[in-house]
Length: 385
Ligand code: SDX
Image (cartoon, rainbow, N blue to C red; front, side):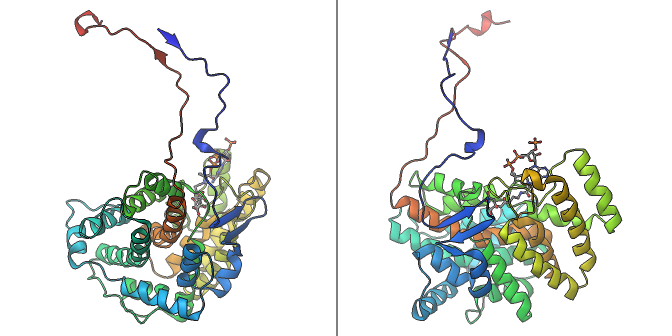
């Protein structure tokens, strides 16, 4: 029996800091706390753009002119409806499962219900399937949310914008102008974020030339985790479990003293305030005041101030998930639907980066340092202790 000597091989767990590919789709400046989509500051896009325009930008690398945007928006709207019996099959589950699991299963059903969807499609077909999935993920999310409330699905309205239609399919009525604008901004802000775990997962699957639906289900599965997209649901659970600012102060002191991870804070790349959290904080303040949730906002601010005091020097500050949940909660959305909304936005980044990588594909296949024995002799079972 022998061992391999590994001392010369260096590696960082979780590929931390390792560059896996080049891209022109987006850039996260962790030190400065800035986020760019195709070179545009996401703060500018949040102020002036729409999700349709942002998805077009991520996909095609430029802001569309009016004709291009109208055609893209029309195509997205035409793709919103789901094949009729996808939802029937999806809700026919023996046990209730998390909406992210239903979303993941729903995307798999969309592939299996589409006989025109070959495994290793050419890139142009993948692009078309990608645009269709951008449209359908919102519909799936809304249908799953209504199913949880024992409500029938709402047919998409092709005359509405992506964000307005999503709220309409969720609630069965038009949202207030502020609610529709905030949802549009939320979808813009979640659309892409460098080589985050779910984007990387979708690209690893794509690099084997598997189908796009398999890439997207891998992304959904990864995003579900509380260290990633699942944190927003944990944040609102945390905030709603606290009944006062005083209780929040006690909670956060205990968490700090016990060195517990506080959901909605910290980031592998940002060592400054997540620019998305900054934008969300403003909308959260406005929406919680309008909807009588200002006590929740005060609790959030109490936790934020104390965590920043304790951890800012370690680069642990609010991330995208800290205030987004307060916004969705103020819009009357259940916490279990927060991460599906994240996925319904991030589908644009997943697909854009999968397509970009496939244009110059290389199978992802890293290595591991083997630290076990080799050439171990096989002992027949009757001779083993
Ligand atoms: C998203 O990658 C992306 O871009 C993701 C995302 C996107 O748009 O795709 O931005 C979306 O996933 C945002 C993150 C949502 N997750 C959470 O809010 C969960 C809570 N956060 C942590 O689990 C953590 O901050 C991570 C997972 C987000 C990042 O963790 P790292 O880079 O692996 O850091 P780490 O766990 O190694 O922590 C380093 C130190 C540790 O202390 P020491 O052992 O060095 O003393 O920082 C501490 C950690 O204990 N720390 C925290 C903390 N996060 C890190 N301490 C308290 N609370 C926290 N939230």
